[in-house]
Image (tube, rainbow, N blue to C red):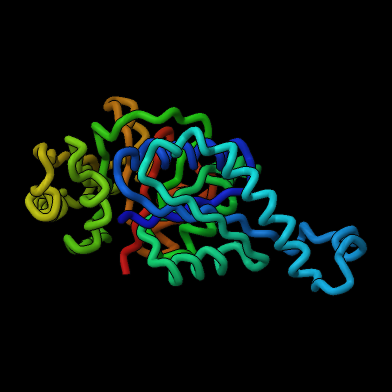
Length: 283
């Protein structure tokens, strides 16, 4: 039984990501937890004035959100009613990532799914502020669905690795589990932004991963490499030359995440993912 956490703020982008998740796990028994977090900034004096005398403000706010979430899930029912899915609403009034981590811990969540939220500003324009916060503060495989992306089967998968990361097969198990039975082809791309170092060791590491853990998949994993380009540009170039359905990337630490997002010292994001991105953490 797959256990997946779906994050929603009731926006179109969140709804699109949820529908993507339903299609992605189609035909598999799943428990989906749909979480809406009420932010403290959304609290108004109206909430105080309309609260019933015997209720706390917290209870009143949560009750309103619970009703809204129940109604929202009903609008999604056509996308899952024929499936072996259990869809469970969850509401909270807390720090966003704290709520996410609590649900992950309480229900043994295997994947988190969310859409981009359209936040403005250069540093947030890649995923939106919520997605970046989840990447930074939530240690769970996170699937980010870009705005406007239409679902397609996972036929071509891009896994990107730099020389700083040396994952174990166990760390990549969530990817293998997701791809098993789909007939996916995996492209293992090694990237070194410099020009001095050769890619021999990195390619050797990727060849080992092609055997274990990716060797259990139905198709052969292909190892390729690029050097001399910043990581975001290398990824963008590869995705333009190859039709990719999912990009898998491991973040090791904040500095590496910044390097992936920014690609240069000026702090501007130069890469915008055109396909869903599955983010893993290297602990």
